Image (cartoon, rainbow, N blue to C red; front, side):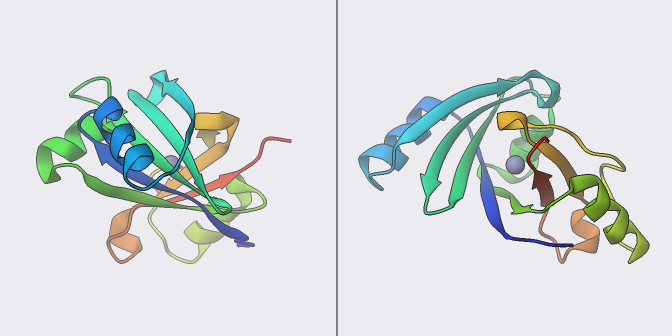
Length: 135
Ligand code: ZN
């Protein structure tokens, strides 16, 4: 699958501004981008920790994926994202190996990355995202 590193860890939060205060004020990290991904009904905030990012996700609608997640489980860790060379190729390989996919083909995520999700039922309960940079 050609995983190079953990690209980011996604964390579902109730309130982006309040959560940023913790990451900046307590952990001393710096929020370098805030971006709304209309498609996924989320507002995101990014922090860099080494070569791995923390992606905070606030829902913009109760019927979006993060809105539903928080309603069911409350705020907390939502997914882990691996950087791969080619998301579509990695999704295809995962499917060939019997993994249930959420996305059959990649779509556009925050920061313009090509992203695709593997179903947590096939990944030991961890919602797993694969992402690659757009050529
Ligand atoms: Zn993500």
